Image 1 (spheres, rainbow, N blue to C red):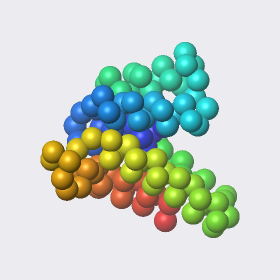
Image 2 (cartoon, rainbow, N blue to C red):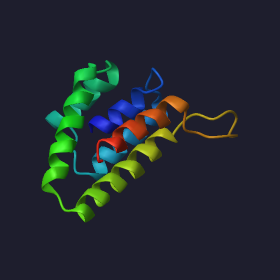
Image 3 (cartoon, one colour):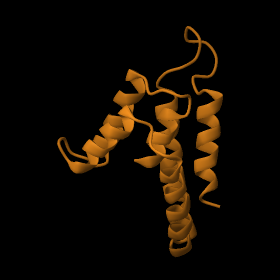
Length: 117
């Protein structure tokens, strides 16, 4: 959830399309309506979380990667890349032209992927 929240906030605000994609992604990963997880995400969508949340996630992933096999790390990283890229592509671009992923979103995705090294 944290990487999706960070990408959604990367350009300074969370728009309706990003919110819809994020919530659908969470639903597809088993987060159910009225769950504590969804309530927390809703709060993070309304108020940008402190930078320490991203720091905690980064340290968690670095530690997790020490315990995973290389193919598991690649699988987890690739899933993160798919989900964050889909979210970042939900809005943006200019009248349908150009990249739909903003520079700030691309930079955040790069930062997130970097935690897997």
